[in-house]
Length: 212
Image (cartoon, rainbow, N blue to C red; front, side):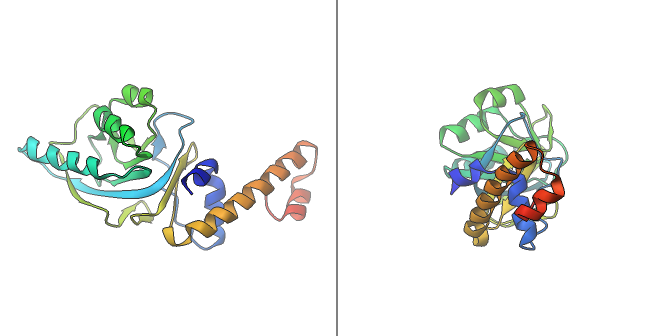
């Protein structure tokens, strides 16, 4: 399923979710890929945190490093940071995640070491970048608990798909059906694309294919 989701584009998934009445499944548009052309797909490994001042850097860091080691291969780490400053992910963390086959990271928060991360080729979507470390300023509260980012509730195991348009979350319970319907719609859109290139008018294409 991960390969099939990765082959789709987020817009077609968002359309199918809308048609099914799931109209709050797209993460805020401020969450963008670090590099244009980045794509990711995988099940969600959720991370919840909050702002917190600490003097015990070692204990805070150990907690985060333990969490990073728990992210399974093929999954996407999805952070609900509730924190508007500091970087919650950096190069060494990315290097470790990539080495263990993790599919990517989506941060409602910040990233740093951007050039190193991009050179590593690991998919990261985030809200901002900054050189400031979060370890002194933020704490990990929980993993694998439901989190809310913008208007989207993300459950552990939901499917997370990202591309240049943004990030869509597909609830696990309907993922197989949404995937099949999105694949069919993408195939139809390819036919429409060819038809309009040959001069078919938009309304005519819609009436013929039932979508546009």
